[in-house]
Image (cartoon, rainbow, N blue to C red):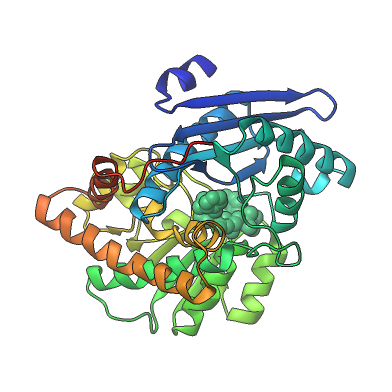
Length: 358
Ligand code: NAI
Ligand code: PHE
């Protein structure tokens, strides 16, 4: 229920809105501004109810706080969720445009306390609209509009780095001949599948979209499996790149994988699920570390003035961070999820800079 979502909320500000013209529900969750203005993408998809949308927004905003902190970026955590009245590909251009305009007005009201960017269901072209109509509070515009373009390639780069760090922790050196299962062949998942295929991995893949599967089969030689077979298919590396909540305690007890490293935000249903993975010696790369490349790209290029090469170098740093996470987990006898949260927490104990006053 909404009451439950709100009583579990540990963030600072949440706003909700409903557009009667389109039937879209809007929620913006600002979890923390301790390290800087809140940042996090806009997710637009179908939800079972407004409470589910709000729950997603609040939990994803919390993940952004951790992601920014552990990546050393001067931003807080927030997220926008738009519960669509129909699947995105069934909305007319006019309806979608209206939804973006309403969202942009909400962003303008927040006046830079929260900066958005792309996420599931939104693109760089959508960021052009949000940026223009909100007065500038959207990261990730197209290059044609003066932005740094999609965050997906650097996200995939970071997940690829994370997979290599995690397989070393699991005791194997390279991906040659290893089975890598990619769930979700979207902007990040497809790029990641191509990277591991280039490493000589055997790619196993699934997506709800048959055309994306067919392309992966043709171009990457991927073996395509049904969506409901994912959690029972033996693999060396499981790379969840669709939506969150995939790993529950029940799944953790049975998953036939040695490593989990992917892009999907909030891939665990709860932090404690990582304990079950640790007991089975499955190496889990916490998602807010592994998928930090997109945020590094957006904030690096647009706030810190980094070049593409500087962004790439920082994304490579995800490997070093994960090695620290693995070492701390081993040393303290805790799950990698808990270790990563402890490392992120250190940023709050010694904030580098207070957020600038608006
Ligand atoms: P996307 O929307 O381009 O791709 C998602 C893909 O997953 C789609 O092809 C969709 O058909 C598929 N899918 C959805 N549910 C599925 C299911 N149950 N089984 C199989 N396939 C399914 O999204 P994108 O940008 O690739 O993001 C993927 C994940 O990574 C999301 O959880 C997102 O929040 C996260 N992420 C994305 C970043 C970015 O820069 N794009 C950065 C950090 C995290
Ligand atoms: N939505 C992406 C993520 O979850 C990219 C993003 C990062 C968007 C930072 C806005 C700000 O990391």
